[in-house]
Length: 114
Length: 111
Image (cartoon, rainbow over all chains, first blue to last red; front, side, top):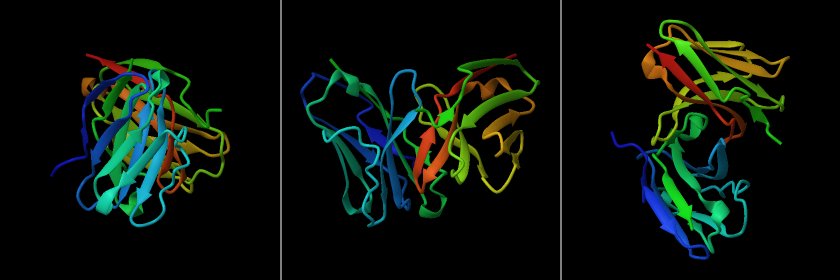
């Protein structure tokens, strides 16, 4: 079956511009996660959606970052007024609610802020 | 402050031998520990997990050992195969769905 998909695969933007990154989770997965991986670093948790519950936003690094999940499926991560330190690979994952540690990742979006 | 540490950025092993990847953590409250594997240009893939109430979990060639008193876990791959060459991430579940990852260890298995 289809895995987690993300778009675009690459995005180059100028400093100060807003960007939107999209994630389509695996059908039937109620949990959705966003991470980012900066060069030479591990994956950094950003946000977690579970069903209709309030999302866990504890990992968002600043108020320039926000995410939505519409209809319990597709999610969009928005970064406003991008900065060079936002350059990273942004990874989305999904899982079943009861096995939140077993997450299925998409291929990521490589964001470069010039 | 890194709560999950992988102190070896890389490891090279001969095909057929054992690969041992190590991970240390600081928070004794973590409930679950995971290993993920990542190939270039792909997202990480779940490999194996272990609950904090166990000290060993085995799945085929992969075994994870947990030493709670030392706050240490390790992943053993026996026998190692060239297709195992990838970056391996150790992770801990801080709360439901909230995983903390280490920086990864790049494993190279040479034929």
